[in-house]
Length: 98
Image (cartoon, rainbow, N blue to C red; front, side, top):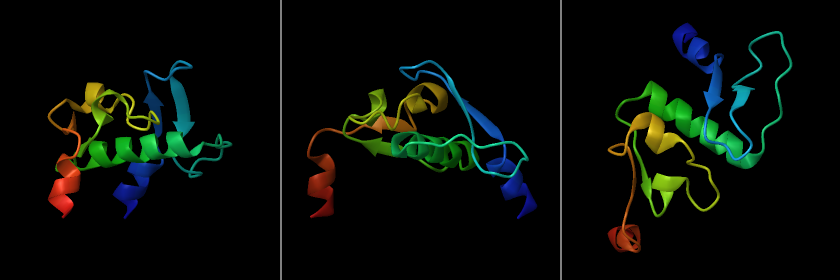
């Protein structure tokens, strides 16, 4: 548990944001103030943590390779590789779920 907490308490830097690199704290583990996150940044941060901590994790779907419609996957393909973060053809996931 302590190892997992240590991973979650570190600071992450996300390049490629439209406003430059963001530096945010993932949790309030440290004594400093934590910056508020919007929903998109929180999703992006959670995906970074998942891909960073579990080499078996993948992100795939329509338009996620370039950041997605809402930019929630920005920087993932560049950091973790296009073999772990990739686009699927439109409709592929829909037909797989039927």
